[in-house]
Image (cartoon, rainbow, N blue to C red; front, side, top):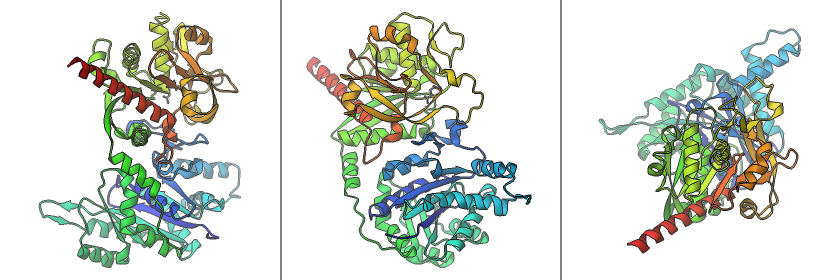
Length: 546
Ligand code: GLN
């Protein structure tokens, strides 16, 4: 293996949303499959210290790492593709960079010097990029620069990349520029000019791209590749086509066909072999050839934006492949569910997942949905807020505590079955103050979850402020909802189940963050299986009736 870490920088041109994260993750997969130890990192040019305070409508899901960092959803792709955990070091924002530089300034570490974007901010960026490389754990670090070249806020990052390439020397740092080759249907032509311009913009900042990855809806003909190579100063073999794919999980194979891994390794003066992606392809084959089909309802309030529940949707893809079943997701907006229409909206579903979330909006709809699926034996999976709503529903309708609530929604309730922990009560800052990251959980003997996980203790990632109020535990358990997962240190309830129900599991943590292609999450796998059984049972009943 290599002695020094090599660096790959991925920049974006022409427009945002070209899928830099997927390209970076796919390349990383191909390098990992050749025996290289690869890390991916994302640098985000916004001022928020992390995306934890961002509304999902702004930025999609907030992904949480083992060490409790609230990060960009691209880190989810990195983990799902590579099956290795990420951490705070894998996502850095401009806000965090400035925060540390300003803290150093306040401590007097700059010894009276004027603190400036160059060199102080750029030095901090370079330091953050090299943290992963210097750990000695990786042969290759891929750094994805968020945003599009030419943006004002990206400039310090681009300058840091320029300097780093110089410091690292040839063969040790390369730049992949992801760009768009649009198709003009009126002219019937693919156009290279936007790419030429964005490569030029990059050059104005002193960076020559080594490789172009061109997003396109049509195959790039030879002459067009030649033209791009000539006008953008790259070798023809370094013009890589990235054609629209039906699933993101096809992209590693598409990049392999295009030889992206080969050009990269050649430029980095590293040995290239044939990547072993047999397991990956086995997953793809199962994903693409399902034996049956089910429909799961996803009840949430951000359902208009697919990215809000990214990890949940991906976990269903992994669990679907594992069960050889196609999982159709039917999004149901929680604001529009009530006790009158719950049957209409939910009765045809094979399983229902109530999603995580914050605040009051759509809460009553979630409670009505839980009531319907609990009473009608439809498999139920509640995640974080979804679990909390299941507890409230049970307290209200089974224990007849009419005003049972969470103090998040109703601070004055006399029956706070979901409440803030003591240590959360005096916190006023919003950023980074929740119960975050991996916590242990002991599973009760004889429970469904113990059987599913096949473990006594698990570790799962959290992101919430409110908790199951243990003062109500014995009442709730006596009535038939059992706390089957407890935090070994605090005794906090992390899982509830209804053993009488075919499949009713609520978890305070977020299992979706840990589901990967190589390791589909056991709870998602079991839930999909339960929904499939429900589907078969319903089909059996309707066939018997006809
Ligand atoms: N809003 C709830 C809490 O803070 C649930 C959070 C979530 O679903 N991630 O506890």
